[in-house]
Length: 537
Ligand SMILES: O=C([O-])CC(=O)C(=O)O
Ligand SMILES: [Mg+2]
Image (tube, rainbow, N blue to C red; front, side):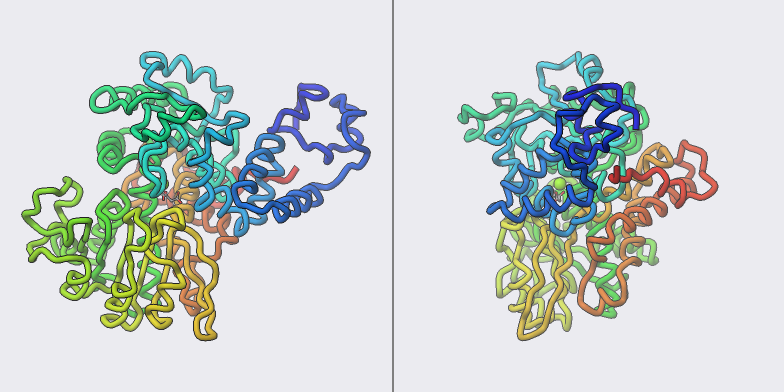
């Protein structure tokens, strides 16, 4: 480690600060004598102090704040804590607590993190990007805050999401923290409560829309191409129509993906693959019903079409296996209120409500991506159980309050038959003396590994094949023991290894497709392992 600063400057530099773990020699060298208490302790002891501190807090938002201050103060210690205690800490720095943190972002604002762009920066984005102190940004997560989780338009308060996603990139896939850039494209908000709030810190106007909006996004994307040509741009929590417009515009030309459309799709497809090991139903025979027709649901369906076609189905046959229900009922041909991305799934059928549609279509799998809590009612789960020995239920909306049903409800209402996964974490459920382990079908299982794979090989872009291979790799890593327990995903504590394996598979595929710009290393797995950030001092 090279530190040029001296004294308090060293202690307030989160990238290098080790605080009471600085050794006697380091204290001498960096002018720290007298500035720290006597004891020099190991990082392990520092980790213990943080974990004890977390336990003493009475709410998760206080824990979030404690960890975010730690992140500012001592980056390595923060990542040691997150990496080592991922199961305890992920629900705090990520869903569900990050949802509340976003709602309270302006209220709790302390030290700034990330980069903010507003309409006032038009024409100057490239220039202000030079204010960012890092030269080698590799991963950017950008949002405009208009659809934060299932919580709607949170304006600039949505900055909590890019920050949280990038923390997972570093903790789960070993991306180096200084190579990460959280970006808030703060184009205003249509949330009147925020506009009326004196503490709100965002651009205090209605949202920029239409051409001007897309011009600003384009200026940002172009500025990134100039300053950080190797950086991956992850679009996150945009409103569905904008999410699709931006993805279609950039996906072939720029190294980017939309996490809600494509990341969620890969993780859901992985869970669907794994479910066949429990139900015994061949993948290509699966009939799936989606509740909600937004970006997550259609993203999953589109990737499933690609997966079915790999199994020999025609595109039309693949579409026919996938059915959508939205607020207006079954999505069928001739409905005048559909968006373009819904049209391939609007089949010729009579128009039905959700429950009648389950009876008529008889799906094996139900996937909820509505952003509305409680929409999988007891009747819905009972109908799925009447139709299937082992109904597969995905309640993907976030945070927990928006889940279509809880894990407990799924097991109870199906009399223990449901195979359940959700976007936000649920604890183990004990039902009639048996332990059930709900899976967390969250894109966090895949985006860090996909991103790592893509930047390692310097991919030109990220075609569907890479998401397919990520889904397959992840599902193959679910152990037989997990499958026997009804879990569709590997244990979260294996996430670093899962991300490594996904990265290897993704980079390998990119080389095979001829879209990797870096030379292929002799030993890809070792090359990636050597790259990965290690938070130990
Ligand atoms: O952030 C998460 O937990 C998953 C996700 O992308 C979303 O719900 O928008
Ligand atoms: Mg998201």
